[in-house]
Image (cartoon, rainbow, N blue to C red):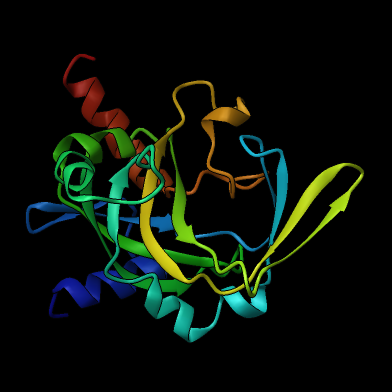
Length: 204
């Protein structure tokens, strides 16, 4: 088989290659672009609903490609030149529907070696940076808590990798769309075993 970027994307999306996967001086990793259904945003004390019929279409998958991958969200919520220069670690390359979670994931090219090493520990999650369209979103209040129904976003600004630290059970350290699912950055057992073996050989 002729190995190139596109064959790597598809093989990773189909589970034929581990995540992360090193090739050509970069690290490729499968990352959740967004969840679907209902999630809770503790920082805003609100629930959000993303309809699978809206967020899993071929058009949405194309929109999740070629986005900057950032280490954490900008404090302003939107990417600018300064934050890009200091915190961009890669780019999204190939979007697909995860057969287990039934939501959009992306194969990303991570160019920052330090970020790639942290991702390989399995202690990272993901969070998309989107701009909603108030005119097409709906909302209601249930038992005093706001429920926002998000339509197709007006803009997808970036995809952030969020460091969860060692305490994976703390909700403030997780991406909103993790919920009860695994973290939004895939580290396969094969990769984890390789990392452990490498650490053992290095005397860590």
